[in-house]
Amino acid sequence: MTPSVETGTALLDGIRVLDLTNVLAGPYAGYQLALQGADVIKIEMPGAGDLARRLGADRSLGDDLLGASFLAQNAGKRSLTLNLKDPAGRDALLRAVRDADVLVENFRPGVMDRLGVGWEVLRKENPALIYCAISGFGQTGPMRGRPAYDQIVQGLSGMMSVTGTAEVTPLRSGFPVADTLGGMAAAYAVAAALVRRGRTGQGALLDVSMLEAALTAMGWVTSNYLITGRTPEPMGNENFTAAPSGTFRTADGHLNIAANRQQQFATLCRLIGRPELLDDPRYGHPADRKTHRDELRAEIETGLVLRTAEEWEEVLSDAGVPAARVLTVPDALGLEQLAVRHFVSKLPFPDGRDRMLDVLGSPVQVDGAPIGPAFPPPLLGEHTDAVLAELGYVQEEIEQLKERGAV
Image (cartoon, rainbow, N blue to C red; front, side, top):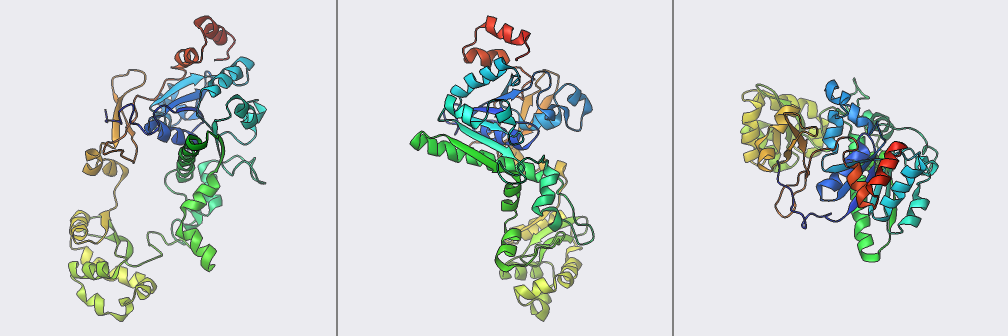
């Protein structure tokens, strides 16, 4: 099992989070908080749970409510099942809120209010509560009520219009980037709100828009348009800010090179055996290299095809030219760099089956220590009795809640 920050030194040790989220953006946010030591209680619908429990490449895992999509984002959390449509289930949530620090939800705007547990109700129970609502477009505005999944946001944000080439655009990213960005923005906002509350005791209502998170993350693509008025265009594997900066063919595969500085360009030309490119007027100035990027690519590849991508990666990197192979996901996860940093955690499988579960840890190390989840993802309702007991319910009351379907 991957080492984790010891109890007492974890950044969010002692913070309790109620995680009422589904699928990816919300669960990803909750997972980042759990990795930093928060006690994250995942509140799920009895009998059904998070939709992600049924999603993933292995159908049999989904049938067991342990879908790969769920397992990836919910380690280190405890599962409490509550039926919020039942008054007793709502009462249990209100009781949990009184002792909680954070509540995260990613329902469509208005759903929590209709259930009787919206922000105005919850803040009366706990004025110091940090309430984080993640949605496709935010809690206000004409689009607030629309359903949104990752692909919807990728398209609306303009991401798909700048991905691929002119021949194949629009093209979605190969992973749910908008969900992930929304979840990361939420986790960051919660951490910031906790800092303010530590100073003032004041709770917070956090309204996270996946659309806005996506646009923010597009960085220079959006800022170039806002500042210069230039409409971004798809450029495939090219970097529009510099050349040579993109993906190049070698003897056996593809190599990314980002020789953005003049010294890096000079070193690249020398190492590939093409020093004469430095004297070519088409490539003398960085702006000229961008204008003639296609011709420059062809010239550079005549040198690169003499060695393998792995060889060039080592040669160029050692000389200070940013370069790396284009890897498959399995190859990337197999990098020694990740193994040395204990980035992938090995956990017992939740239902005790004879296999280990690999999940990603935190990309952040704290005080020199890697951070992984403290325990496996939960079975549906696995911690219901324990959490209710912590809230003050006696066993007889818990059994009554079960009988009426409230938990």
